[in-house]
Length: 357
Image (cartoon, rainbow, N blue to C red; front, side, top):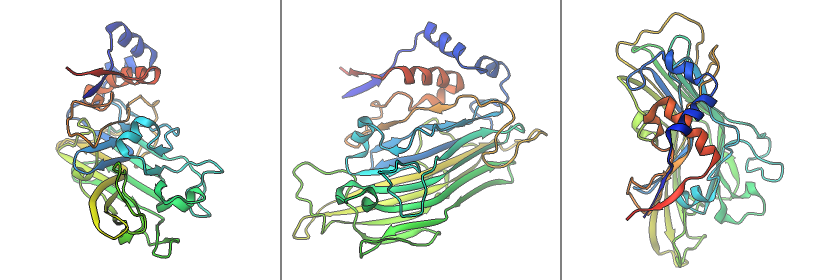
């Protein structure tokens, strides 16, 4: 078993904190309680494979003082490296909006765009979050001549947002311009904007078992696309917490793949759940917003943003042992100071694998 660890010395931590503009002052002018105060979270895409495996991309947490944490536009796909692919499997990709001229996975007319994924604490100390982009689920096992030939599902103009203004008025919204699904004829066509429930979709499993006699023609999937309506439906790190009053939003994809051989015999059933644009906000039951400006889900606060990103991580599907965790998975619980310091280190070096005895 392998566990990823990173050592953070006191000297390095002090240097890292000093290198983050405004971080020292943020700690002395903390506006909300880290563990029980107003907070929001935003995540562009996370996956649960079967019952034990999960891949959670970078989660944005609202700062402890008015400001915002926004996902870098460089995150354009899941999985983005070999480490994530080992967890996610080798067959699927999820495009997050941006694409190159020769790698367009979307139907004609859907332009490349950057996502907007952020968690904010407004000047009023009201927590808000928003996630908006285009999403494409790609099955590389289809073997299409061009990227769009491998796309089986598209959420065009998807947006999820939350705003916890008061205990009696938590607001959540989830919308999409159009949902595209590949039909029985093999064409990618619009299927409304309220959700999808499709049986027999030509979509292979998220990962392939070695020496498995899988037939692409006989294998199919059942796909359900619906709105996130409860906090527990989000795929999240342990530090992604709720509160006395919580609002949640996002798009949830539930996929059951019936893996069959050339004779149509069932070999196994593969399950995966994907949450796109998962967001939440939470406040205490006695929360009262401060009188100030800055309103609306994802509105830019007047003060500069304070780092609050948790690096991506995951638990591989072959084990449910939570001790094997990529660095950053639990940083939310450490607060903005530890999170910012570790984030700087994470960008400078990769975690060192250490064998457990």
